[in-house]
Length: 381
Image 1 (cartoon, rainbow, N blue to C red):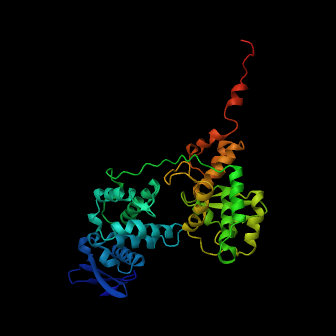
Image 2: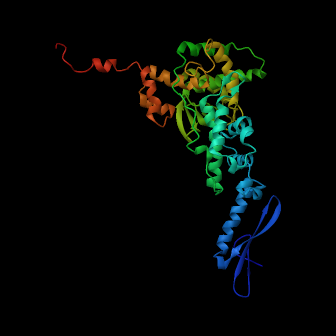
């Protein structure tokens, strides 16, 4: 057997001129020699090299990938591990791992890929929608959809990146999504914002050196200044802040783009003080080179919101309950109340569609009354 110009590709030519191509590669620290085919079958050294690249790229995703090449032998848990390996280091990776471990994995983990049908996914949806957190509140419809989307995403990964011949059971017409009412009516007025700040100023806790209260204040200052989503606030680093221009670069993880926001003068001292002790790569909220977990703000803010603003409301009252996302809604609502043009609000919120922003128009002091009164009609008809 002789080498070719391609790494790991070898050939053997018989007396009748037929060339057989082989590839050598290492998987799971074990050497493999695989026959690719013959020249009679149309196999070339270039084709063999591509086959070897495919084998070794699978190895980079998972050490025991060879046994997973047969999709019928792959469990959903093995497929998820392949997928999560491919997105390691991205902003939402840890959140996806948590959702899988707590909600998706316990149901799907041991299913073979070919055994997961739209009916199976629909059964999961029905069980998920009746699931309660802390034995009290049902999970939000969007959360249930996010769990189903993990299933769909894993299948899409296998189909597009691994060339597996699969149909995506989560995208079938039989699998409905939960209907989401995103039209939250609740926002904080100025007095309520002051009340929240007073609570933090007087908060008594046992946390080490007041760390939790400090990061809560930084989180609140950035939220009320920019209206950015939770994941975006958590991923703002010292490098993203320019105090000379009071600007901040914000990462929109939902649409995978960046945009600019501004630091309100009322919060400059809080941000400046926080930045003094940080390196350029440290994140403002966590105060370290590591992004704070998404669950941390929920755990500390939600009890405060419940105490200050949610008394007497049902746990599933999404329109009137104050939650973390209410801070984003507050930012846009206060802009509208102050008379900010709707297109400016759209830009500051980084909405992709004006229809996402138009609901704030009803809060504008210029609600059309002055426009009607300023029409050039005669005064004596």
